[in-house]
Length: 128
Image: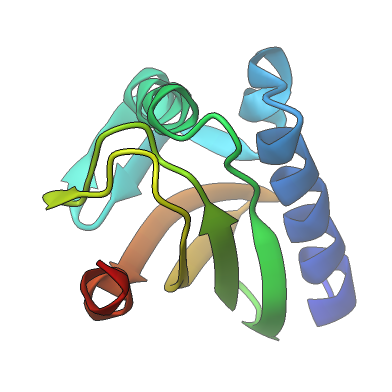
């Protein structure tokens, strides 16, 4: 697989998330997916994402940039949103916040098998 093909799969995955198209999540995420070193399986990963959208009704994943070196892809995602209550331990409670996430993925056979995520919590804290 080429880096451009991997990047295209990733863009479609982000579209899947933004559309909350949970029935098609398995097209992009392996059943045995690991998140930050923990085996969460597809069902746990989906539950995490559903919970994110429940806590942040206006959640939207915006790709800032992508760097790919098959089978891995790194991305910086930007968020500008209004969480309903607590976000990463901070009492946001309906205030608009902007932050980024640096996230790295490993793909196998076109699907995500590993996710490593680092969220800029300091940016959120500084806005509160």
